[in-house]
Length: 296
Image (cartoon, rainbow, N blue to C red):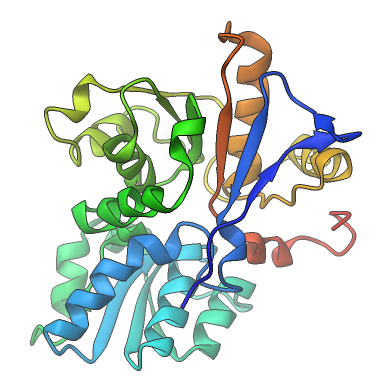
């Protein structure tokens, strides 16, 4: 269904632009909608749903959730129905993300933020007979992490000393930690204001052996919280594209790459270090920006 994941060395004038060199795993290129890390987190859940003969997939997300639209599209491709529980009251105008989810046949069910926090109660309200297959928000869980871990088998992982990713639910970072080699370090950069709890969420998906691996969280790059942005972030996105031709989305990858850029300037890294940055997709989220905000 999906092609091999291309790797983009970040260069200017045909030389590495960053020191140490940075490559980007262009997961955003594997599919126009189920892009980035989404397919790898969803594939195990979808396979289990079909094996257990469910006809409807249900999950959770916000108005700008890449997970919501990816689930809608993936379910459609698999011949399954889908329902999304959306955080917050229904707006007068749907985001591009939610409109796309509707276009892929997803039923949207809006709940208040207070209701959203009690997902068990929401499941009982919307699926009292247990007929739906429920995927956790963001694909969180062992199944989602396993998909990311297995994805690493298809790339030249051994070339890199550091792997860097944006962090939402922490599932992708957990999968990276599970799949990395002993000498590698995984760096996660949260895009939500959840610095106090995200590490415990990640570690809940790890084994005892994983705890011996090298990993860390870099905080301070949420730019106000999930799907929040500033002009300085948009300026950074334009500058990055103009310099190394890397398109970023303002919800996830721009914040993570901003954090990585700071890290490269402040960290004392060995001369033989080489960075792999995961482009986790989500470029469709940029459609919600005013026309002309980005140069790509």
